[in-house]
Length: 140
Length: 111
Ligand SMILES: Nc1ncnc2c1ncn2[C@@H]1O[C@H](COP(=O)(O)OP(=O)(O)OP(=O)(O)O)[C@@H](O)[C@H]1O
Ligand SMILES: [Mg+2]
Image (cartoon, rainbow over all chains, first blue to last red; front, side):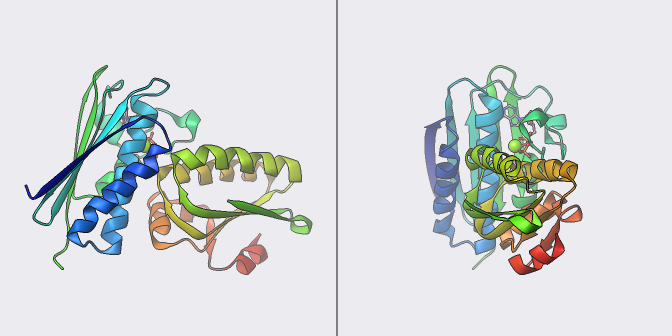
């Protein structure tokens, strides 16, 4: 492991921008392309927003964002201690949303999968959710 | 966010700035819906020239407004999305139901 960082913040929606900006700034160490940078920023935004909207709903809790760099590979881990996901396979299907009444489109996981190289989701009902995603950046 | 009404054409132009995420979406949604009601506009133009970032929350905002405007008998047009915003729009298939154009002038000709 060449580098790592860890950030914890309250589940407030105005921290979404804060978190994805930190993730992008951390990635800057690897001198990514503009496209890679915006992919990372978007994927992290999706995971953090999910933790805030779905993980905690109306309760209060902390969201954790970890970043790790190993060579040209960057990994982000977003975790919450919220309500958890009952059926992860179903949750990750394109267009599946647990909250259609909130104008959610069910595209969050699809965006994370498209913009990162790999994604792993672990969840415990009542215990919380951890999303781990990584991407190997082009050599520059 | 700034809005202007082109009254004789019943068009509400919404100029988005900076970043459209879940935090911002809550407000944007309310303001647009209120303004559509107040002005009797039936067409909506999203001017995305100055919008540098959008995530899935933006998809919800666009599709939600599309549904409202469709009921009113009008249309939604998107102007000049930047590359990141365009990718999200295309990934969600929004370009299949909503027209995208390069200039506001074009958009006004299309409504
Ligand atoms: N951290 C989480 N805690 C609990 N449930 C989650 C979490 N993340 C995702 N989910 C569940 O997985 C579903 C799918 O998530 P996804 O991000 O793909 O779509 P969405 O958030 O519903 O809509 P969108 O991201 O397009 O606004 C959510 O609706 C929710 O039910
Ligand atoms: Mg989501």
